[in-house]
Image 1: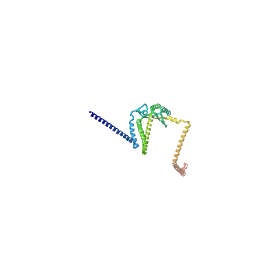
Image 2: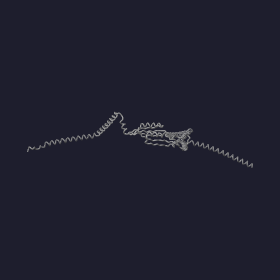
Image 3: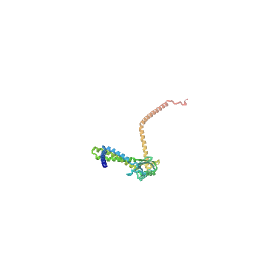
Image 4: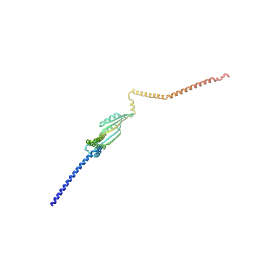
Length: 336
């Protein structure tokens, strides 16, 4: 029994030693495989061309996009930007635009009242155009107002004068803004990686290739930032296009024409009459000049016709005189 126990103990020790040896061998092989895989990953991470870096970043962009929170929330009457850092929800980004038409009685007074209302609401007039025709006075306002004061400004404008036309549109750009944010992060990662590659580049052609690709990436980053700034500005400030017009009646037209000193109106009337007479005289001269050849022919023919009639009249007078002389007088009654 003692011999068997001793053999069993030795077999257990050999089995434990073999297990320890196999564990050490597997650990060393795993560490070497890990080191080789890391070296392979580093070698693959450094692309042969800068275009491979862009493709890798596009994959990161998809990952960033899918990691964005799906829940969105709306706050208050206005719409603000992204939620605070670390929150799980995003606020909606909506660009509001209104198109209004207003008919007023006194255009100048209404124009001043509109500007005062816009200033009180915290907005400003971005653009203003004014025109006048024979029947209307027109003014076109392009107003920018904070999103949280958009509805209140519409209410104040309706209090000034009833609106003839009202059209309000909203465009939800939340999805586009989230996509732009993901694209921006991806392109910034590509930019950082390309800068690292340029530091490690030892060949001139690699440096030039990385530099060209970096320029394209930076240009795209600026475009994305510009679009994001545009969206943020139009979300933070809504747009109102207001057309104001005043009808001008026939009585107002007559009064406008009759205004001014008497002598000025008389001089204007005299100038108008002189202008008309001058135009008539010019037309007479033009007509006479055009008809002059016809008039000359008519005068010649008329003169010939007059001469012929004069001669005929003289001949007839001579014939009558001769007949009168040749005809004997009739016998008187005393001769019988």
